Amino acid sequence: MKKSVLALLVTSSLFSAQSALAEGAFDADNFSANIAITSNYIFRGVSLSDDHGAVSGGFDWGYNGFYVGTWASSISAVETESFEIDYYAGYTGEVGAFAYSVDFIYYDYPGELEDGSADDIGDLAYYEFGGSLGYAFDGDLEPFLGVLVMHSPEFYGDTDEATAIEGFLDLALPNEYALGIYYGTQELEEDVHGIDGYNYYGVNLSKTFGKFDFTLGYSDTDSDGEEWAGDSNSELVFTVSAAI
Image (cartoon, rainbow, N blue to C red; front, side):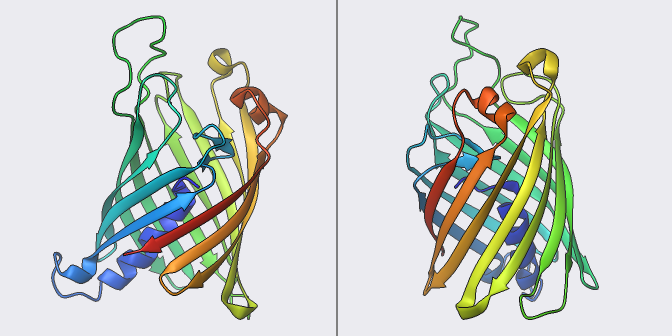
């Protein structure tokens, strides 16, 4: 699965909290890396690997709530791009049981067409900014409920403004399993896409064995999402990842 905004914010929040304990900004404990292999690259309910597998990895730095990182994945090309690289930065913090973040992500697609030909659909690279807010409840399942909002003033392929709003619930299950449930909407410009957006949703069940995290997930969209993607988006996804 693509490193979603939600996964990015959760990971960066935990990483920044841990790195705040380090004495110097560039101590080794402030740096981390990750790798993953997935059966399908899903982003907001839509496959970006044409329902094939993908390999990804990234590097992160965090200190006193601030974080900077990069992440890359293989993809299925829309034009002639060979992979995707994301660059992100932001700040995360906590106030009592509330956790929050302010975030910026730039999505880059090296090798894309930029010659103005008929196959050049516009600038694929784009950026988003926004944030998240979550609340940790007491209880055996350690429920964490939150919402995130990310806005792009010029979306993928020069297709005008777009905003993603996503709600999520994370639960700690018995035997060290973790369950994540999410529901979101990707708002789009109707005069460009023919629809004003689509809804996406899914559930992920995860368990850690040693250094490896195993996740089985289900992802889908409504009919508008299928229209936008040009195919059914109902997918089971299996991912193996590890932090280094």
